[in-house]
Length: 296
Ligand SMILES: CC(C)(COP(=O)(O)OP(=O)(O)OC[C@H]1O[C@@H](n2cnc3c(N)ncnc32)[C@H](O)[C@@H]1OP(=O)(O)O)[C@@H](O)C(=O)NCCC(=O)NCCS
Image: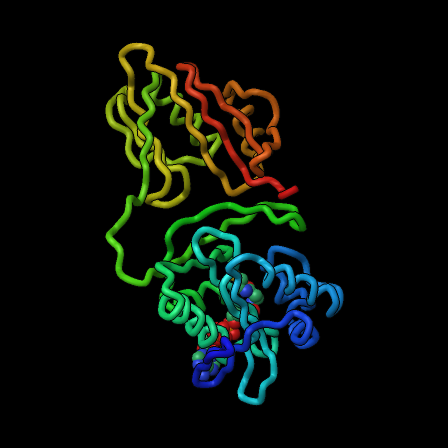
């Protein structure tokens, strides 16, 4: 193992060499179906694949391996991405190597290496919510869901939802699972109605007639980001909330305007990679709706 090769029952993972391995790996990096989930479009030719691989391997702390079957054939890539705070696992296989358990075997070896010999405390994988095969790999190597976020790749029309799955070296105590915001308002029903129309919120519960307390869940499920709306006797102090959405800002903006909300102008591209606009509630509260925008 001194040359950095990892071995599993059926595979050999050799440190990825962009120049030597690009020609074989281009079968994956040049395939639109394989690259459907990637943060860039399929590479046009082996030279572009080599450049992309050189960029990835050149990042600080990146460790990528070429996945080889017993006969030495390169069938894919697995490894750890560089230049991110929590070490991120990555994997991909040529289409004709799908369905044999190779990705799971390779990813398990990389995760074991990361949490074992490399001594990392935790590894995670960011996987598009609809990428069923990749999520199955993550589940088989013991990664569990830690949260969700939205991304917008430069080559795509729309943002997408990402599941962050992680595994730590030793069991960790349960961390805070949610932060629930208390929002004091003058009219609980009107605020709930606005959150329903603009942001698709559901009410987890509504107490009183007229309501004095309600909980809005900002999504279609039983749990998720929540806002507890409570009736304030006097004009409450204004608060500012930022709501991350996994869609384009424009339709949310349109619905907020249609719902009669006071909205400051159209969504504005921010330097931190988000497109944002502000909904102002009658009490002076500011709800900033923040959507991922295309990276510049
Ligand atoms: C993600 C990706 C690597 C998964 O490939 P995969 O072949 O589905 O995953 P595995 O190699 O672990 O194979 C698992 C499949 O092989 C089957 N299998 C067959 N023989 C097997 C064996 N001996 N051992 C284990 N599994 C075996 C499993 O039953 C499973 O099949 P199923 O999906 O029908 O249940 C592949 O779909 C890919 O390259 N996608 C595009 C790139 C990508 O999305 N990367 C991740 C970005 S986050």
